[in-house]
Length: 463
Ligand SMILES: Cc1cc2nc3c(=O)[nH]c(=O)nc-3n(C[C@H](O)[C@H](O)[C@H](O)COP(=O)(O)OP(=O)(O)OC[C@H]3O[C@@H](n4cnc5c(N)ncnc54)[C@H](O)[C@@H]3O)c2cc1C
Image (cartoon, rainbow, N blue to C red; front, side, top):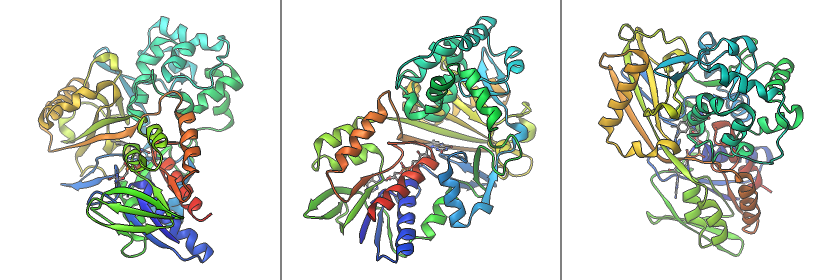
């Protein structure tokens, strides 16, 4: 079987690797080509070693709760390379009213599960706390999908949305909560409401039944990464592909189907024949490549919006940072009017990110609610990030390391109704036998979801 995978991000790499595994298991012949437009594999996964710092330009970790990435690491024999978060510093701060407030212990993304830390928290007003407690008695909602904003306002009130849900979700999805589909991103909360009515009671019940990873001596923390940075996953996967399978610096520009065969052409003049094609690019690229095959499908795919973001990594001498950095970092509610969406204390969260006597802090900027800021020049973005770190953490010293990375149109947005759109996309693709769409745009944006998506596409290619 001739398989062409288009796109060498984690989805395409996981697809290519799984295809090699399945071919070996079934002793089936496989001729594999993985075509990537850029000069390197990994897509949004980029780790850099600079002056003893380990900088993550894109993702800094993956979720161990979803099994697929961890399972892949086990099969690759690199589980021993994983490092867990230092859970002594599990705390996250919220920037509100000019200072950092700890998110109360037991707060699970949208709602409190531990009553004492919540009741004594300085982050919320008494009125806000009472409104959140109303969740205990409010009736169930009936929507199959609704925006995260509507859900949190309805169950827990505007303050819970503005001070916690919006900034936490912006740090993950870079999304506007009033557009973000709850069913596509956090179906657990809809399920909890269906089952238990109250989110607070439902989360407490779930926690009593199965404590969170990382809280009870579990092998892995909720988020894990590699000792040498996330790019270890990319290089390990790339090394397991057949020699010459990965073709770099070729941008696929056309897909054509004749009889039961596919022809994949690149802008650089390459032509590849295939029995099966996996399109593992961003949705905007997949839409361009499918527009002559099925314009209706291409429109459905093109309508998945993308946001842009940037990360600013700053290294400091530890002595130059007055703040104790006793947490994983902070998030910034939109209502504060800052440039930063979030700041991660990278060298506190994971070992080996900064040389002895130094710390690494990463700011996250942009997203759906603050897209304009990315039109600023690099120097201005760095200055904004530094100015806000001065306000939040009291850092006035010059950084010893400054790295800025931009991620234009890189983060797919799951709007209300996203799952119905993906169902429609998948139905339309079945009319194009041999073609599969995979990646962050469809059924999960995290690395674990992308691994799952790529591997499932590879398995389908063998049916
Ligand atoms: C700043 C940032 C931080 C993040 N943090 C986390 C995190 O901590 N944890 C987590 O789980 N997730 C995180 N994510 C999300 C996660 O990194 C991505 O969703 C995931 O890496 C996407 O992988 P992918 O392979 O689907 O897409 P991509 O990584 O976007 O790869 C797509 C590839 O396709 C290539 N391509 C496009 N068009 C063509 C073409 N025509 N021909 C050939 N090649 C083409 C592109 O060049 C690219 O390499 C983060 C994302 C960003 C941007």
